[in-house]
Image (cartoon, rainbow, N blue to C red):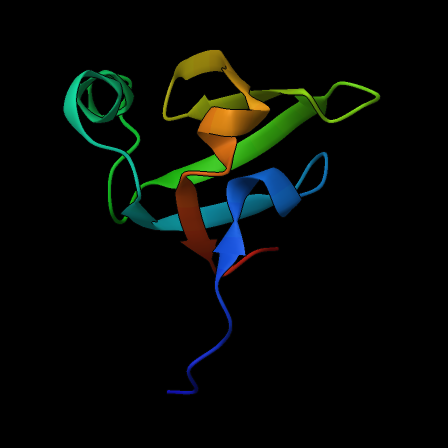
Length: 81
């Protein structure tokens, strides 16, 4: 398997999907992301991006939620489609 460069969730485009590799957050923020189903191996679909890419609407399983750019930059993904 080829080792690709790190991709952050904030780099994904509308309608795309990706698989979570790692969460680069800690403490309460990491626990909050996990409680929404954002954990290693979970698939995320990018539903919407604000014009300035400052907020992202994503879907994880049956849950839709909005993330700030700062939060999306802490989520490393691969298999971006």
